[in-house]
Image (tube, rainbow, N blue to C red; front, side):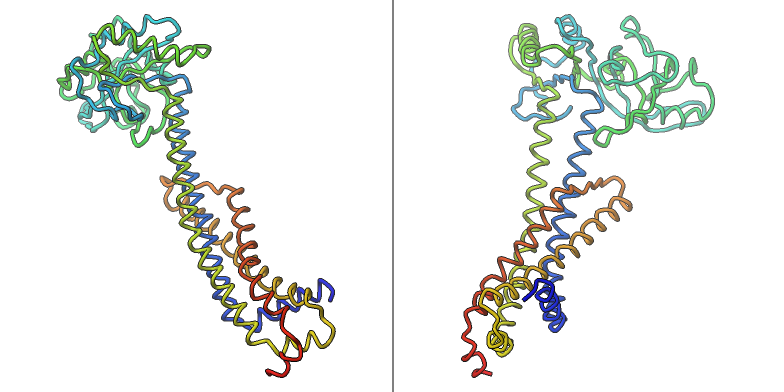
Length: 398
């Protein structure tokens, strides 16, 4: 039998059992669609988190108060230290070789006022090196200098500037932060969000002013920018040694950006694999459906098999016909699932921009291969059973 004839024969057999074939294809489609969609969501989140970290460069080192073995972001460490981090600690770290910039950090939230306009926004107490450390650009004016740590100066994020001043020129104007007067010295270029924190809807003030404003004893974090050519591990050891000398004990956590990226990547990789495995459950159900329909087909088509054998069809040709039907069912289910998964990912990305999706074509093509493999694996048993039928007994049974 020619390959074209065998293909047409398999399609006719599938159409003859329309409803049964449709349900089987649907089972495979749901599984493939789930795999494509879930991996698209997982990969989208993966890329989103990594891009959030990467927007601050790849040479950032973070020091947080409290010793913990858990790597994470600012605020993730347990703040239970005998001696909190101070601006003096930041100054000591700034004197280390291969440290290009240091910015102590204090974070809070307060009402920001200008004239009759008021907006509650993020308040960040930072050092003069912040633009260099966080890779932020100045759009207007200038950032405050180290010598101005005690002065009431404020730098506005792009969004906060627009909300308070509109199209008016903000430099030199007075705003009130939690009731205290500050002079606007600069405006930052748009930076975007960092894991839910809108850096554009924020006001940046000197660290010492923020400590007094929020009545805090110590810093939330010290961010350091290492030289590109610096040995990260060696620099971390220098930081730990310097702070241990100052504190008398290791009551802090040093985390490099490479560690942050590595931990985030490993977690998100595990998430992607997990959601793909969940989709695989639906694929298993689809495989059972193909096995069931092909097994029933062998029982119902014994006369047909007998006639084919009587007309000269060899056992391997019967085997090929039934395997072809199973493979076509798997492929049709895979194609339908591919369209379903990609379409769903696109719709979710369009409706919910905050939930990023990214279709990984290797996963999608792999899912197509899996659907074909499922069809063949589920159909091989019934196909062998059909090929082994004795034509005489098959015709006599009918």
